[in-house]
Structures are given as C-alpha cells and as structure tokens.
Amino acid sequence: PDGVDIKKHTDETGKPLDGVPFHPYYTIGHDLPGIVLFLFIFCAVIFFYPDGGGYFLEHPNYEPADPLKTPALIAPVWYYTPFYSMLRAATFPLFGMPAKFWGLVVMAGAIAILFVVPWLDRSPVKSIRYKGLASKLFLGIFVIAFFVLGYLGTVHPTPGRTIVAQVCTAIYFGFFLLMPWYTKVEKTKPVPERVPS
Image (cartoon, rainbow, N blue to C red; front, top):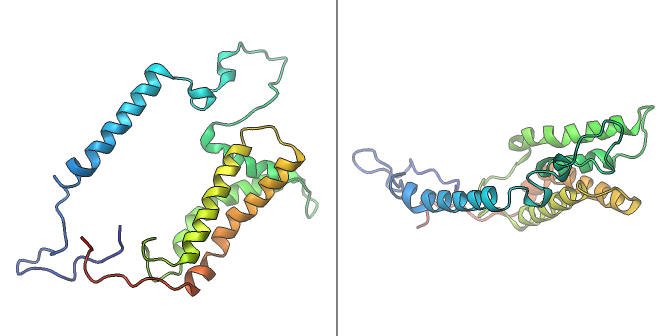
C-alpha cells in the first residue's frame, strides 16, 4: 500500500525484513473487524430496512405495473446515477449528431477512461501518502463532483441542475485528462527505503 519494495532488505535466509505475515496480523487484526462490521450493517439493512429509502429496492418496484403509463421519473440504481447524470448533461447536437448520441459517448467515455489511468499517472510515487498537494486537491474535487453527479442522477433535470451536471462532468474528465501534467510537475515526498512502522 505504501509503494515500498520490501524485497531489497532480506535476512540471511532470504526473507524480507520488512515483511509482515498475512495471518494472523491482517486476517484477525484488520480483516475480521471489517467483516463483522459489514455483516452487522448488511443484516440490519436486510432485516429492518430492506428498501433502504429507495436506494436498495426502488419505490416503483412496489407499484403495480401499468403498461399504459410511464413513470414521471425513471432513475437508475444508485451506483449508475453519476453516469446517468453525465448522459443527461449532453444537451446540444454536434457535427450533425443528436445530443442523445453525445450523451452516450460521454457516458461510455467516463467508464472507458478508468481503464487508462495507469498510463495517465506520471508520478514517481504510487501511494497517495507521498504524492504532492496537487494530486490530493484534484482527487478531493473529483470525489465531490462525482457525488454531486450521483445526486443529480436521482432527481428531475432542470436547467440549473443540467448546468451543474455539465460542470461536474467537465471536472470528472479534467481530473483524468490533466493527470499526466499535474502528476509530473508536482513535488512529491520521498518514498522511504524501509516500510514505516
């Protein structure tokens, strides 16, 4: 997680000095409390709050189906809402293609750009602990924009919300497209030779 190579410093038998056995230090000390917490929350949701306010099981699933009436708001499940908001943010035709086509291109590009992140990051360090202020600032703005897009994907579009979605979509793509520049020029902390304790 720190981006530190532990194989440089070994003892006489070849074991890394900075290596920590996975079991029991991580399985019991780190993983087990997280698993117990997850199962507690999971069981609480399943047994006491299964619909989750419409985020786990959507409200239209409880309404009788009417093939002659379209619901007023068709919102996707919560984990698709940022991309759905980007889809709706494209409102103008370009190069003779309709806005719906460009919304699809933007949404597909938002997913596809995640696959090229390893080649976009030009930083000499990989851990966020040692990256510079620019990476941390851009990441914070990116996360806020992503959550705003997620919210905007669950509500009715208005002209004001559409503008906010367009700005947040630009921030989303700006985070990735500017990454080769700001990760290259920022000042990073030196990576330690040994794993910090």
